[in-house]
Image 1 (spheres, rainbow, N blue to C red):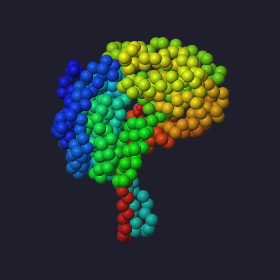
Image 2: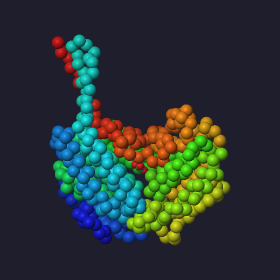
Image 3: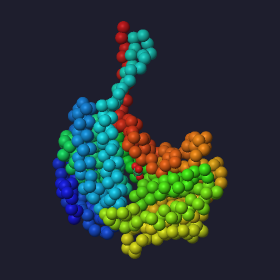
Image 4: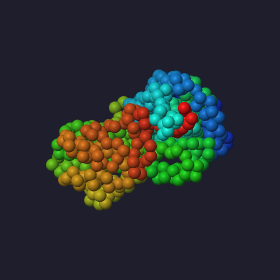
Length: 486
Ligand code: SIN
């Protein structure tokens, strides 16, 4: 069991209507540390009935919360932010234990997660309307923005903290209330956040957490229940499509942050050392398990050998193993299924003729740590060109012309993140405009920040999270037409 400075954060019950609850049938989910297979804790395995009860509570709370002055909502959010920062080490410890990412990275995630709470606390009082010139002498037009209502939030295991706060903070700032379903693999981070929300003083029902092993049933309830007005999901494109279809019957507002297949392009005029640094940061963050990780690296012919040899050298510096040991850079993959998939991708590349320059296997038998893998001379018929790898595997393709690499980069159904390195400013504009992606990193491999609108196009999603755009996803516009103003 986990030893924390603040043991109150170690929860094994769900938070519904301000009360900590077990599952009605007493069922539990075992939460397993992916590094050593140890039991980290347990969480209730709840059903759709309990989710429906949480939705009722959120609906009741919404009727009050939406009428709080925005400055009062901001005050509670700021308190929640402060509590998260005060409990940073404990939150990171819980995160590393259930997810596996290195402790330093987990601390980075807690700071990143909390930054959404701070930012949206400040945005709450800035939900401005509009006054528009009327269409007749006696007419006036005003526009106000109102909270959409109860939000269903379904969040992933790769960022057990930040993907919750990135949805919850703007929703609460706007005046919405929520029912959150975290991943069954990482529910403890979500429950710890709920404990801090309770301490911060959110009224009962404003924030509810349902943990479950039965994601499809809870997904059906959150998308089918007419009291839920908005669904916000981060996860796979496959599941996102199901949730979008299910939301159609009640025409819910939907935000989706889905899969990616990020190109990382290095032109001949790039600063190669900076490009290698960017590729390392983008590719190996969270052991390659992020939607914005570089998936396909494309390097122009003249600098291919130099880039590959420098990347190979940088990879040798990575330390693998237990995320709780200081200095670890690469932790385990989340579960055996994830390891199987990464192994399949590498095997496919090997049999189709790619060269595995380093890695290409698990670090130790019976473990989920996969060696950082560098693959040269891959081709477009390999799985790694089409599939989101979600592991520490870097395939490096060679290209000749700008036109060729744009066509390769865009040859995917995904459109989340993309990256390129180069110095020619005219080409920078051309390439940034030509990439069919929602986000473009130019001479950087790190694009995630509270201040920017995170999100994708094509089959990578709908809507934006973070920045001034993030709160709009939780607001409806109401237009009032005033007549008879003589
Ligand atoms: C994700 O992988 O879903 C999010 C990554 C990020 O916010 O940087």
